[in-house]
Image 1 (cartoon, chains in turn brown, cyan):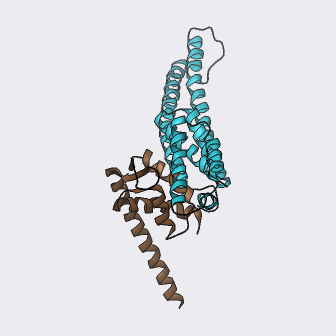
Image 2 (cartoon, chains in turn red, purple; image 1 turned 90 degrees about the horizontal axis):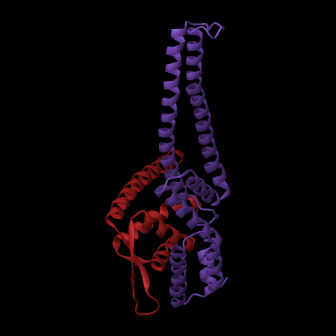
Image 3 (tube, one colour; image 1 turned 30 degrees about the vertical axis):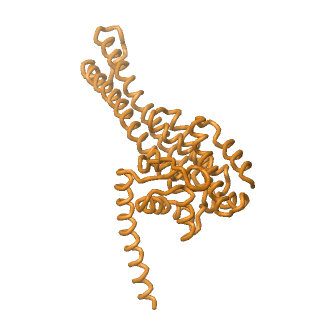
Length: 108
Length: 193
């Protein structure tokens, strides 16, 4: 898929996943790459950007196996931004799907 | 590529960043490798999934420089932020550099214009005064008194123009920061994200 197109959507997916519960970086990568192909390395710069924007906060938590993990959690600002993004996305995708459906019907 | 080599290349491409930021970023990727290993993936496999460490490093650099330019506004800061954003890909050369040069050009032309207007005011007043007291023999095409008024008007207009331009530059600065942030959020240097 077109890289520029996907990168914009990735941010929304990360925020949607964090809205459900706190997660660590690897977990986010794993959840998303099960659904569509991403370059795993691009999640971390994205998380850092969300952190500097104040949309997420982080904390370290020990795990049963392996090293302590850095968990990301959506802040109040983040929840607001996520809702905005999802609303914009829904409006946009409804409009695009409607257009495609109309044109397909007109052709067929 | 093995873990150590990946982290080494990443660290090299983060040059110029504070040690604290560097350590933080490296530890994110180290954690990624460790959890990946627990999930039974080899270091080679994880590196392949992560992508090119140098393009990851460039993205962080652009991110931090734009943030810095936003927090402490300076012409040098925004310049560095723009250069770092340019480094994210060839495509950016067109959609970042061209608008930026265009804006700088317009601002420079306006500044020269207002500066000349502001300077010619006092010169006109000077000539009119000299003519009024009879030292300056050349006739101005308008009356001396009229020339003084026009001179004052030009000086004020030029100064107002310069003030207005500083105000315009400040707005453009904030717009540029917003544009760079949007650009980093959407554009990725490599083909695959």
